Image 1: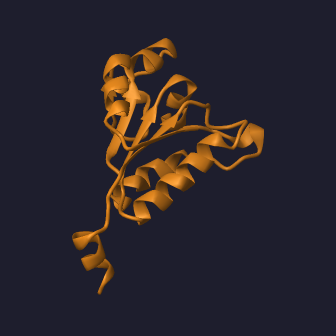
Image 2: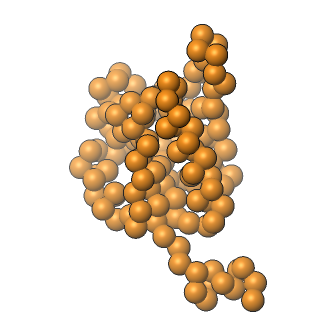
Length: 130
């Protein structure tokens, strides 16, 4: 039996949401989340990402990390589409509280309200917060 048949005949696809709440640098949370997202997608799960609180900073364009001596990984978010990860959600209230607009973000996202984000999280099989 091939892997394709396994997925069709008995494989279970679960809905995973990764909630990114932390700023992109200063902790390992953002980078670890991105790695787990890519691994989940490799196993053909239904993956979505949510960016709330300071997590919205992870998607900012033109991030310069020279002063903190860390490599910027923001551009990696552009590669997500190649892994069939196209469900990126940003909480409107978090973005507005930080003075950001969709034009400030490196990828296309769906901006949704805090209430809509809660509803979306309730529809998931697994929610992991970073």
